[in-house]
Picture 1 (tube, rainbow, N blue to C red):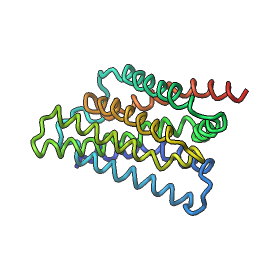
Picture 2 (cartoon, rainbow, N blue to C red):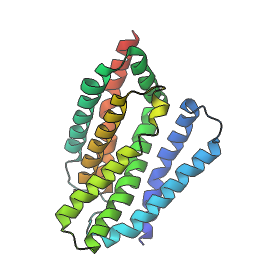
Picture 3 (cartoon, rainbow, N blue to C red):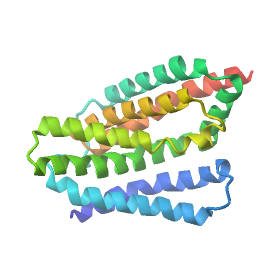
Picture 4 (cartoon, one colour):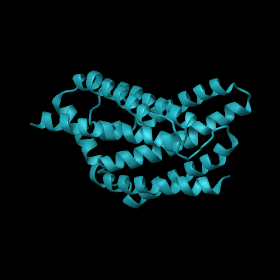
Length: 232
């Protein structure tokens, strides 16, 4: 296991844990899980996937695991954002009532841009690209699957898992979610996972993080503008 990778990746997860910990105090009202338990859960998640990637990545043929490189991450980030914005504003939003739309947007506002950028952009990439995608890629290499096919399969599986893990949180976003919310959540997150997965395999963990961060940073000002428009 690479201790350098483990320590570096775990440390870059800490800001996201901090921001999400404080965001959850605003929009999670259930008292069956304490603030301390949530903080510990986030910390253990970062610890687990930082360790998994630090052990697996050196065994794969992934190069430049956490270094910066010349991949066109800005372009991938914009592509990721455009696809997601299309799904959100042209598929989901027209199907929502004003009450449902405000409920969803209020949740995003309470979560805050810092949590979305540093938790979603960093810790989720550590979990699903650094940890799981590299694990699947390594397993496919062990059984002799062609690198291109293995990469496609690893991206597809990790992206699907990435989307599925977002489904339980829908109840926090919408009190009575309709089917279109679940469909949007699956398709949009698979899309983000695919783009970030390509960035990870072709570039590095930092490339995947930059794609995910740029997605949130691109969406945020548009979201705030549209949210204020409907409030007025």
